[in-house]
Length: 177
Image 1 (cartoon, one colour):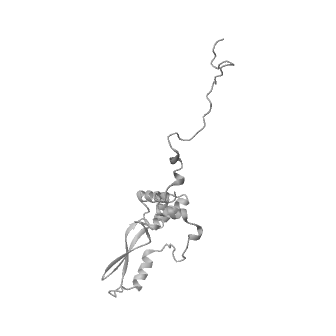
Image 2 (spheres, rainbow, N blue to C red; image 1 turned 60 degrees about the vertical axis):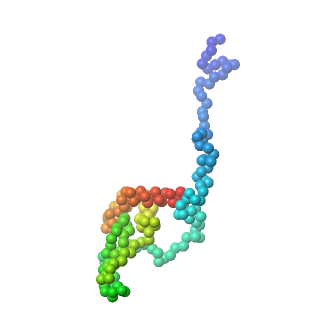
């Protein structure tokens, strides 16, 4: 009897190979497969550790710590008419410098010199407000261009540069891992 491709009753050959199911990556060992679940604490950042161990009871909210949008010239012109320097007893003038995104330095100038105050708290070297607006706008589905349009329409600033936006997004991503 001739040998057919399908085979005979004694020798059964399949016309199609058996479907193979995914068994995992053959090049990774078991320790790498469970890496994400067993990351040691020394690899995580301090913020990531706090997020992992925090519960809803740990969160305290202070009603005095809020963000407000103020018109700089009106508010600080009124303040400069009321306030005097405690050293030289002369009037003070307010200005701004070092603008980075939504954060800047408030410059208080009088006859005895000048003092710079950050407009808000810093996280490492970046203003917290910049990180907050990126995080919230991304939750709303708005990216950097949306933030820049919002800031320009509100006459707040020109917005965030691409490099600072990318760094903030990477920091948020690393923190929330």
